[in-house]
Image (cartoon, rainbow, N blue to C red; front, side, top):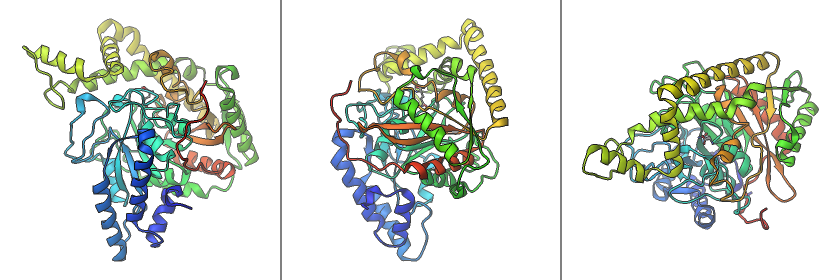
Amino acid sequence: MKIHELTAAETASAIRAKKFSAADAVKESLDRISRHEGDVNACITVMGDSAMSRARDIDDAIARGEDPGVFAGVPYIAKDNFCTKGVRTTCSSHILENWVPTYNASAIDYMNGAGAILMGKANLDEFAMGSSTENSIIGPTKNPRDLGRVPGGSSGGSAAAVAAGYVPIALGSDTGGSVRLPAAFCGIQGLKPSYGEVSRYGIVAYCSALDQVSPLARSVEDLALAMEVLARPDPNDTTCDAYARPKFADALSLKDLMGKRIGMFAGFEAEQMDADLYGALKNAGELCKDAGAIVEPIDLPIAVKYGVATYYVTALADASSKLGCYDGIRYGTRIDGPTLADMYANTRTASFGEEVRRRIILGTCLLTEGFYQNYYGPALKVRTKMAEEFEAVFEKYDAYLLPTAPSMPYPLGAKETDPNRMYLGDVFTVPISLGGLPGINLNMGFTGGGLPLSVQIAGPRYGDMQILGIASVLERMIGRPAPCEPRKLGEVA
Ligand code: GLN
């Protein structure tokens, strides 16, 4: 196997066993990036020099007999909304185009502390608002499985980097599906942890009530190892729970699904979604039964009917207040004008993209008195009802299966001009976010035409280990996804 085909766990153990060096792993990563980046466009910043010098430090530590950590010498990429000390963090926005943070996000410190090597910062939809990674100052990222299609979003750069074999593991953020959806579209695995598992300190906020740092990889084992590294109490984030985390990698020792009860989501018509993805959901249900689980249909009427509307009302209201700090004074770009108000207006009008401006305006309206009563207040109540609906399900089931996306990755540009169509693509991911629940996107193989199939496994709050176990049993039956040579498939419909 070539270095770029290895998982993070395999890369680290090969480096520790001196089969190859951390410097070799970094060289291979840089080589993949320089070969394919012209087509894929996954990176906003590539950190070749600092990565090479980190690799030499890791190799020296190993030569001295030290163990640099579970991700010893493993190259990784982080979405460009993670603060990185001394390295610009743009959020794909003109307003932060030249902003260089003075500190690292906790997740970056934890990954570095475990021996991983940061290779660069990945493309995203501006401020993580979007589902396709087309709203970006560097232009769209393309899906390595088919360069004519979107990679999903908003962590599309991170997902594409893992699928194209730049790195075995990447960090993204998931507010309403931004890691699960690109993982599905790019044919890899991605976990959104329970809200409160991982510190959000140092990731640029979109909606603090929902944002969660989330790993992407090509194996469930790597997701579990990432959780061991990332999930821990952090005094810098009071929403990050202080409880003692389990040993997530122990989830991998689950042999089968005997005694497990799994709810299979049935609250929609097969015609409402792509037939191949519906087939993948059914197939996942059959595999669970083959592994010994009891699988029964479940309905989540509130989540499905009101999820998208509730999510967008909640997220936009939160975002409009969070993005108030970009005023031309405290951060980033400033465009002057004769008065202070002109300066605010000039700066914000010129420096936010169209989708971000749309959301700030809608979110600001939602928080005005009349709209608050008619929309924001009711959305909070529906969210509570939804949480009750989930709780009732989890009294009977250990996990449930549902689609990650209603459609296959679509051609670039297909939905860019129609925000409503884009929002509806989040129908299966946003309810899980609103419930604060963990969700994994599991690759279910590929169609005959080479496009990725997927399913989502959701669990009760803090049931991350439970769903990692179920995902690992299924992954052993399906096989884990390999990275690809980025290519354009035939004409896309
Ligand atoms: N697509 C959703 C949105 O645009 C989710 C984004 C995310 O999870 N960051 O809000």
